[in-house]
Length: 474
Image 1 (spheres, one colour):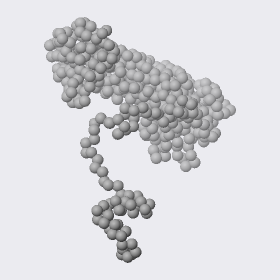
Image 2 (image 1 turned 180 degrees about the horizontal axis):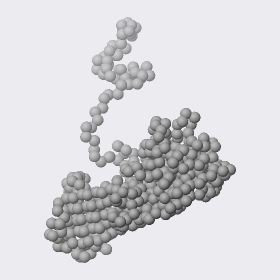
Image 3 (image 1 turned 120 degrees about the horizontal axis):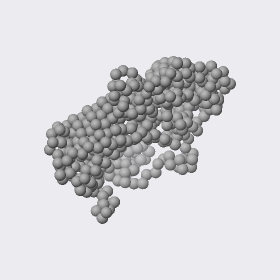
Image 4 (image 1 turned 90 degrees about the vertical axis):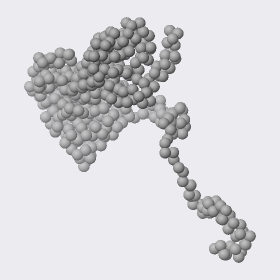
C-alpha cells in the first residue's frame, strides 16, 4: 500500500513516512479518527496514597458543595409513593388483637364469631405459626402469643378482611379469657430475687457487661473529692409520621414478596425464613420509601403474620399499625438508671470513675445486647481516666419492649456524665469549659477498652463552639 502511494504521489508518501518516524502515535491516532475507531488512551498512574481528606470537587461532588437530593422534587410536590399508597389487586386488610394486659396466661381463645363474619377471609392464631419466635440476639419474642402475655402490646390473634373496618370488627368479636399473673415494672425491683420472673428461670437479668481499667478504689483514695450521683432517663417512642405498614403477597410458585419500610431487609428475610420455615431464596423483601425511622424499623413486627394470612386467604394482605399500636406494640429507647461515682483532684482532673447502670429492656430482648455494649463502652465519656470500672446489665420487665433508637445507649450515658461534669465544676468553682479541656482525650489517648485514639479533635471542636457561642464574653 505504501508502494502504491509512493508511485502515485511521491511527495505525499514521503511526508507520511517522515511523520511516522517522528510521531508514530499521532499518525495512528489520525488513522483511528479517519476510520472512526477509538484512540488508545495512554496509561495513567494512580496515586498509591490518596489524600486523607477529600478535595473539593475532586473525590466527590458533595463535599464542600451544595448537593441536591434526587428525591427532593417528588417530596416537595407530594408525588413520593409511600407504602400506604401501594394497593395490589384483591388486597385484604389485616388487624391484630392486642392483649391489653401486661402479665397473664391465656386460658381460652374463641375466634368463631370472627370467622363467621361476612368479609373475613382468614383468622390466625399463634399455634399456627411454624416457628412462633424471633429476635436479634435472644430468640424470645412471639409473633402472636399462644400462652403467656408479657406486655400489653402482645398480639394474641390476627384477622384479614376485605376492609379495615370489617377486620377491626372481627378482632373485637374474638373472645379471650385470661388468668392475670404478677408482673414487675421497675428495673431495680426486677433485680430482686423475689421479683416475678418475666421469662421464668432464676433471674430477670439477661445481659451483663463489665469494663475495668486500673484500680478505682486506689484512685478514690487519692482523690481530693469524690462525687456520687444517680441519673435516670425515660423510655422514648420514635413516633414516625409513617406507622408500621407492610404488604405480603405470594405468587403461584410459592414465593413470598413483602413490601415494608424495614431498615434492615436482610435481617428481615432471615427472620421471615426462620418463622415461616421456608428457604430464604423464596423470600423477597422490597424496601419502600421510609416515612420516618429513627432506628425503630430495624426488625420485623407483623410481616410473618401478614404472610400467613395471605397464604390462608390466597390474596395479598396489608397491615398498618394504628397510632396507639405504635406506642404499645413497637419498641422504645431503653430507660436507664445510672449511678456515677467520680474522684477528682483539687484542680478538677479526674482520677477515677465508677459507673453502675441498669437498662430496662421491657418484655423482650430486641437490640438490648448492642445497646448495653455501646452504653458501657461510652459511659466514662471522652475523658482521659486512668482508673475506670463500668458495670451494666439489662433486665426484663412487663413493659413495652426496648429496642434500637438513634445512638443505642449513647445519649443516655452522655446525659449522665456531662451532667456530673457540670456539677463537679460548679462545686469546685471551675469553668465548665475549662474542666472539660483538662480531661479531654488527646491524640494517642487510650479508651477504657484499650483503643488507641487518632485524629482526636474534641478540644478544637469545643474551643470553636465556645468561641462561636461567645462563652468568654458570657
